[in-house]
Image (cartoon, rainbow, N blue to C red; front, side):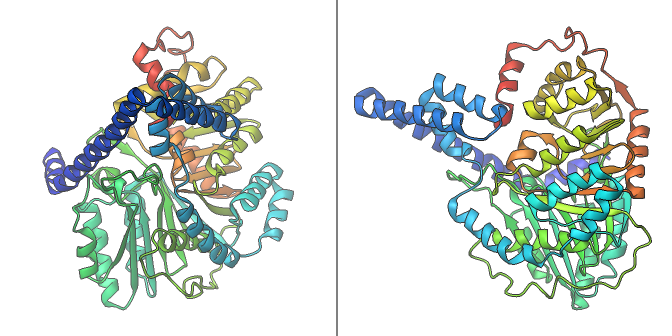
Length: 519
């Protein structure tokens, strides 16, 4: 396994070099701008005054904004203590939501696509009568993200990513019209090669195949000629927000979604990317825990719309779809299950934190228990308050995090949140076999989520994400059972962090915690 890992990394060294080169260039450009402003401030009093006025305006703007205090305070402190550095960094990466031109593209595509989703008022009324608390959350998603709830959809839950991969390969081989695949990370290695062989076969059969990936997420996994390789075998390929030298104000926003759509009838989503480590073909961080779901039926329409949004909005240089109806097909599928399925997407373009609000709503509505699994735990005051309040009113609140980290600095910040949670009754578990990358929640045996949304600032505020809210279906119980089984493999650290002695943070950790939202 170690040899496979080294070979895989050797194949992608060009991507790593490009990442390092681009990062160095951006740092040098930022340093040059800050040095230039500093020099001007030293020799021109008017420039110094303007800089301080600008810093004051930014602080007032941040203070008056409707952002959570956890997001505002690091910027306010940085700008007040180091005005030049703070103003420079805020203008570089703090303006979340991209450029006006980018937002306009997404708004235009959404105005065309979202009305093509079905009216779900009858379905939501049925859910509201049957499970009122799940109905409330479904109402929120529809009203604020525009994604409807469906029945007539079968859901299969996979407690291991490799099970999802094998199911995807089988369904991909049956594609007749089109295949859409959107992933944060693709590695040009064993797992992807299995998929690519099937895609090439489907292309030869006349199937339209589209692949879309995030450049930052994949930069350590693939070479720069990946798109050319795909196009040469008939696979249409686009990249989200290429990571290049330059002061890119959209750099802070990445595509973290994971979606596969086959003929508009079958769809997959979950936590795993298309890289070897997600399927335990390699083991860089011990065992890898990831999960996913397969949808078949009417709810796949929402996954199709989510893919088409990103494919058509990402660049104004590409030729986009003029007609979406060919992909939003009517299905005569008759589901065996009667549950409620609601795929949804979250975008930094609209300033509505759908992913976080769904999680908070589930915690607030829970009466017996609410459990989470997340690779990172870097949460806002609002999320922390919801978790602690639920625990104090007697709800069994548990969070599973990794036992072996993939990023040690982020892991230290994750652990810094333990004490504030456990002292109010939240229970924390660390999965000892390795790294758990799954992003799930389940409450009261009646509702659950599975998707791409971590419990961290970057996922909740900066990234394009997607999830699936499920109620009154077998997948909810399957997720509950999997989380319970996973806890049996964990070490519970609740008592260890309850007094604060083990949660004592060095000054460097406190500093990182303060600026966790900027990482």
